[in-house]
Image (tube, each protein chain N blue to C red):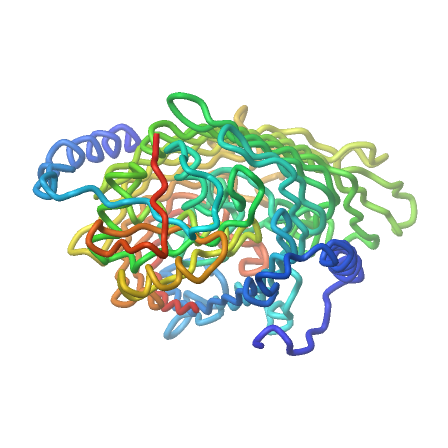
Length: 410
Length: 148
């Protein structure tokens, strides 16, 4: 099978999570029903997306403002799932993703690897537990944010699904409980998870700790989501909350260790009709660094993000989208002027917000093929990746971006 | 200011769109029936449970037996009618639900069949199978499940 290629695992935790999931799965597989082979339940799926990004100013996912633009946005994934027992699901996905940076970013990683035991399922409710590396249920899109076919646009609304600290929001290595309760008017679903998040270079760069010797060590974090689907999903509402912690182990002389915390709330609302959907999400993101003996490193801010999105299907396999998306890094300094002053003018005010108007078009000529194009007009660089724009003072406040993407799946 | 004008734009587009969900021309056709393997013990499913099973969120029959879900292609008229009339969801919502399950490790995709003859064959020969058929495709190798 496609997933049998040998991959270089990104870290030892992936291995541990996988091994735990496999061991549990094998332990339970002894009880398999004889009338249906377990291998009959094996499913293998995958996807591949390649984008072209062109900007007039600023760089997004590679040198997008130069020459013919950037092709450095590639997503490739493959997963396998198996039901060794009627109540048990084993699933794992490997993801290679490059979004700017150098080719080494595309090193395949274990995206998720879990065992799901649905211990209760009757006419009224289902209840289950997942162990392993689990995708965080955060807002409407986080769990499958890297799969183009599940996105309404090439880029998800960056105010909430920004890539600067994506590693932290992506997954947790731990345990999740879920409950689905069917009510007369709709379905309510709750999920609570505890685990160790990922903390990679993106977070370190965004916190501007990359120039300080030391390491980021993620600590026990928690996430929860309550989701209500009314009338078969005509109206969907969700509330997600998380508390993520990362310890900075300083190796710099004179600087002690510090801690990073991230406590976001997301309110999500969607109205669905056969041919159109209206989606809105609002997030409050509290984050900060604390416990450093250098007070200039410590901070505590609450950022605000929201978007309103209208998608419309037409001619069976087309969809267009319009979206307004807004981010401010600090609610008490919406214009970023105080921030600019505090840095002595070294970092521009426009790095503290971003308002993005997006127009998008998707065409699915075949269920396995998706072609998309979209245009962004952005005021501000609040979610512009740091690695693509190392010097914030050289960025332009107002910029335009054009993206094209081809996606395949099986 | 620009936020407001955009909100206004979105509202106008919502109101100006062509008549929606007015496609009730198929209302006269016979309902599509929920069909299962003959050994399945459950005789009746609630609509919410049926929807959870077809959305692949519930993996077993109420008595604990593993369920295997069979569906026609998204653009097959019988699939669209079954989704809308019996499950009260749109086919594109089902597809998105499956994609989200399959690519987040929380579930599997249903088994696809080409036509109703294959649907009947697979349901008749797969323990725990659940699918749907028009009445004229029924035979005594499958059982009809009633839906509350």
